[in-house]
Length: 112
Length: 112
Image (tube, rainbow over all chains, first blue to last red; front, side, top):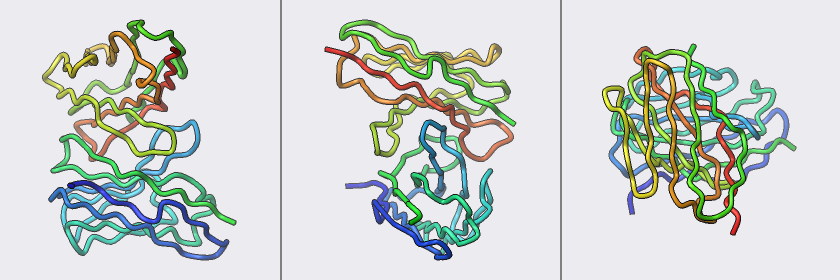
C-alpha cells in the first residue's frame, strides 16, 4: 500500500543526545514536510523540501536538521540544541506545493 | 504572517445533529484551504481541499465552503455519527507561502 511511514512511533531521548526520526514515502511525491504538534496546539512547520537535495527552514527550525538525499526519504534530527523537544512529530508529503497533503502516523518524542 | 483561528475549540453534540465548524484566516491571499481530521495520537487525514478559485467542496456528509474576501471557511457535517468524534483542523496555504498554516483545531464529540 502507498503511504508515509514514520519510525519509531515512540522515542525517549536523554538530555544532550541527538536523535533521528525516520520518514519514508512511496507515493512518488516531490514535496515533503516536518511538523511539530504540542498538546492543544496547531501544527508548526519545522522544515520542508520541494525536491531532492533541497530543503528550507520553516517557522521553528532552530535545534533541528534534515537531509533529502533520496526522493522517498526525509529524516529529521533533533539536536541537543533543541531545548524543549518533547512533542508529537508529523511527517507529510504532497505531489507538489498546493496539492493535497498526506501525513504519516507521527512519532512521539519524550526527553527523560 | 497568516493566522488561522478555529471556533469553537470544543463541541459536543448528540448523534444525528447537523453541525458547523468555523475557520477564519487573516490574509485573504490564499492558494488553497484544507480541512483535516485527527484521531487521538494519530496523524492527520485530509478531508477536503478547496482551491482559491472554488467556493465549496463536498465529500459524502461533509461540505466545506470558502469565502476568501471575508477570510472564512466552514465545514458542515450532516447527520453526525459517534465515529465522527475527532479533532478537525483547518489549514491555509498562502500565495506567498510554501506550506500550510494550521489552526488549533476543534475537538468534536458526538454522543450516542
